[in-house]
Amino acid sequence: MPRISEQVLENWTNPPSNSEENKLSNSERMVREAISASPNLKSKTTETFGQGSYANNTNVKLNSDIDINVMYSDGMFYELPAGASSKDYGITPHSYTFTEYKKDIYDALVSKFGVNDVQWNDKCITIRGNTYRVETDVVPTWLHTRYESPNSTVEGCKFFSDNGKGILNYPKQHIQNGINKSNQTHRRFKKLTRIHRKLRYQLIDEGVIAKDPISSFLLECLVFNCPNDTFNKTSWNDRLKSSITFLYLSTDDAPKSNEWGEVSELLYLFKGRKWTQSDVKHYMGILWTYLEY
Image (cartoon, rainbow, N blue to C red; front, side, top):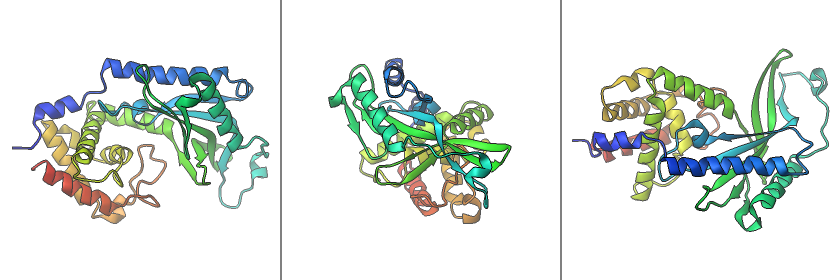
């Protein structure tokens, strides 16, 4: 008998309750209002949108939070083909700096929520939660354009942490590819992702594993890389078992798993990352034993 019943796993596939969803949507709406009301940002072109588990609809009950991306697109970071220069693409220097932009975002949020509820962090600005909204991480980003040729570009978002580390993401492509995978798997991709995320929280709470290096984001990407027939099994225990088996065995094949990407399919999952195939294999072994498979 598996350690966790089919009914429990079925319950874990569900998104947060309506009351939790209301708090999530309240947070997003209030951030939009704060940015729209900012005198320093009114003259600038920005786009405010959700990202992460909330926007991808893979968040789980009791662990719901929200990430909001506020992207500036008047200026941009860029990546050029080898040998090309910014002049070749008509890119001119921009006097407004990313540091100034983050400060403008911070001021806008303080005006809306009050200084006691807004915290400046290395990579984001956090709004404390209350009974009306959830804790919210607001991520100031700039448009990042990858020029593959003069007539072909890929757009993402980039920001710099306070210690100078550049971080590039493709949240819109992540959202769309997650929808596509869900459609291809009878709406089971996001449900199985929620089960994996719930199990991670449970293992952490019980002291079986540490919080790092296996993150909720990594788990979503790992489930995304499972073949579609993983999701065709007859029960959630069978689907979970199949995904663990695939991920455990596949991370032995470094040439193959080295090519795995994030859900966006625009960044590698393992190359140059803080987690490794060995980390994943070790975690999946622990999970298999814990589930008494």
